[in-house]
Length: 291
Image 1 (cartoon, rainbow, N blue to C red):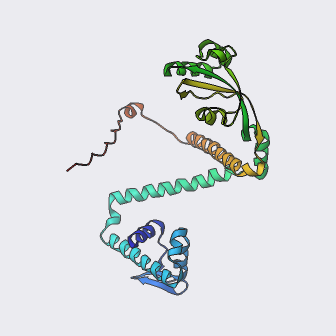
Image 2 (image 1 turned 60 degrees about the horizontal axis):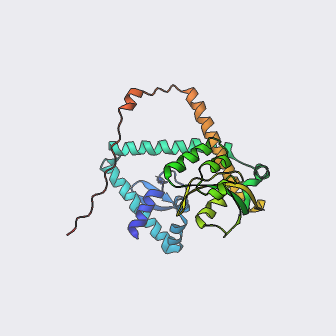
């Protein structure tokens, strides 16, 4: 447990000690010339994860916390005394940490502020995309059944290019009875079809086509000809819509911001050198030796 806490503190805390001269408030901890005031300790405790805060509750918990601060500070001082802060690998990691931190700050400043959505934005989205929040209770389906993976791939590609589903079904479907009707197999409620088909069919919107679905009697591609159901109430999906809109706005703001940055800077990618770069695959872990 102590080892876990020490690692936790080392990772989470940012040293907030000050030099003895000029500190405000009574000190709680002094190590050499460095001082932790009561305010310093409380500030660091406030950054703890909730799980750790519970461990440090009460006078005994606070004493344990300060003991962890002592360990952290002693390790930090010893590492500097040994010159580890001058190590090239350490310096590289520091620079990488600084880079990531600055990137997060610029994203927070430029992207997140531009991606805020209002309650009105969310309601307008709901009103314009009500079909997205329909819970289907009954669907009318057409299907195409083929035997081989290659056949399914060819059929799916034809459909994605815009060929008429009924026409393709009448030409290639192994279900000859439904093929005569353009693949139409009628209306279904939940529980009335094979689970593998139902899981897909009730997620599709009217007019959408599924990916090929392998069943025992062949590979099926289905299309929802019609759907009936009920709308999810706005209050039940408001949070989901807000998240979706925020993510979309963040993506749009990010792309726009990057494009503007590219116009401000000269970027030169050496394609010849790039082509010579190879990445060796990560070796698989060795199998354990059997005795």
